[in-house]
Image 1 (cartoon, rainbow, N blue to C red):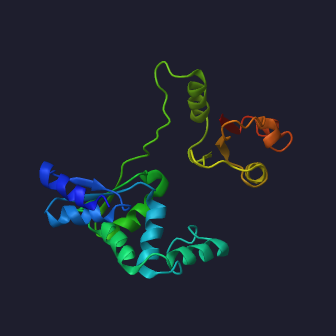
Image 2 (cartoon, rainbow, N blue to C red):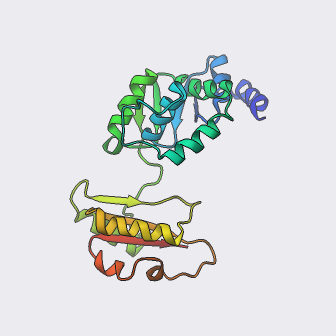
Image 3 (spheres, rainbow, N blue to C red):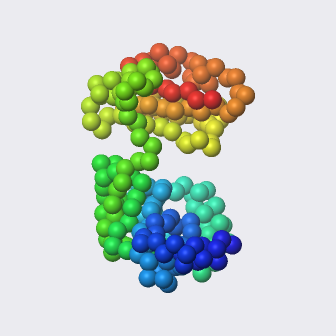
Length: 230
């Protein structure tokens, strides 16, 4: 519905460049029709962008070259159900939005984390995929919070590639069962160090110790840090 107004904006300001994401595929079409260079910005990271491109192009996940990026049978069932509601024109538009990018494609990631997926996207799109780093950065700032400084010191004492960061974003709250399962995985299966952000919904007054397995915090002391957010 915003498309006509967007055309008017392009005609009025005549930008030198349009940076867009795939959720507005018509934006890239509009700019391309006016000879305005466009650059796609992948906000979700390289692995998910590569997976989505393969799925939309091949209409299946079978044969995707990175088996570690996969979906459970129930997830595939729901995906197929949702996929049926996306018509061919919409699928083509999303693909074209990725492929209209001029020479480069910006991705919200880093090569150290997703190097092989970045290379895959570059190959498939025919453009250079440029990682621009995470939009959210953990960094020590002069005069920052004491706990932030301590966390950076803790990370500095760990070996490279030895620490997991777990966060499920600002809109999802883990259930008690999910917290318990993740904690068991961190303690019993993974030997990695970790920083785990646990977010409780507003008004919930569950003590962190009660949400976690009994004695968990003591057993992972020195190996893991839990950041509680309400």
